[in-house]
Length: 258
Image (cartoon, rainbow, N blue to C red; front, side, top):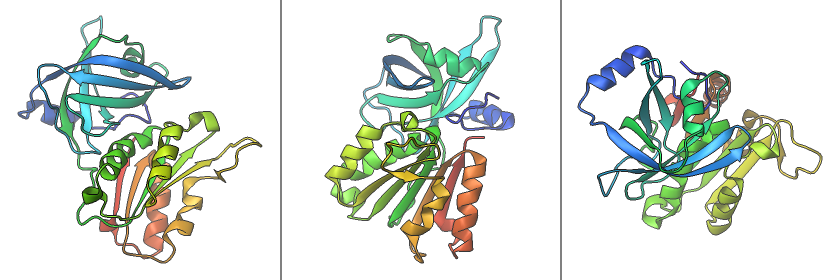
């Protein structure tokens, strides 16, 4: 499978299982393609033929395309937007020698894609608690969906406190930075905490890896939820840290992108 931090590594047998299930194929038209960095795109789509595309924030889609040689390629990508009519968005990296990621990043507005879904259980679990969301790279995608949905309605967020701890290498790699900054300014119960492992001299925010800042947020609390999304090494580091602090594993939800 393609190696991508925007890609859920779904085993081949699970793809076969999903394709045999009663999930109808959907066709979506690209409405907008925006560069988030030199190798990362935000792609906005509209599903054709339906007024509303239903999904739960945090879920993913399985997209399919046939290569010129006839080989059918299927890859899974997180939905990076909250439910909004028949629209959804993706956030993905170009992957060297990765057919699907480059195909999608090269699409022009008006182009169509085919897929199935939504799938996945990396979703907000009731009852809602104070929550820390931990991400690196395009692991930010499901949190963009979750947080916009949560904070849009007081009945949803219930005035719980949310922290988004988002790790990147350099400042140019902080996807949706202005958007999350504005969201935090508008909601007293949301703290946005980007941290850079290779921040330049003018960077005024946090430095280092995400796991270095978790303890300052959670302290000795055991009554929170933690969501972790990104590459396996980061996910394991944060899971191990939280478990060492006495957290119940059921309070730690994670999605690995490799």
